[in-house]
Image (cartoon, rainbow, N blue to C red; front, side, top):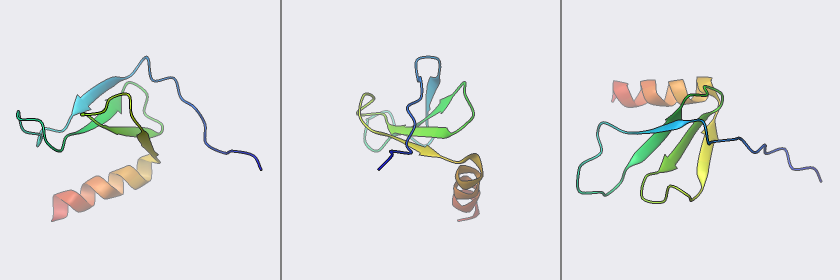
Length: 69
């Protein structure tokens, strides 16, 4: 069985923490910029931990849904 997940070079991206993240730590989300496809997301408390990758259209729909609530 072939693994369809691709590895991406994340050495050229900049991670940006959510503006809703507080200064005390807690639940912080970071999104990678510098390479637009796919959108990469990680937990700021574990920067070397797992990262999620989303299609641009799926991430955009997710963000728009959050704004609507």
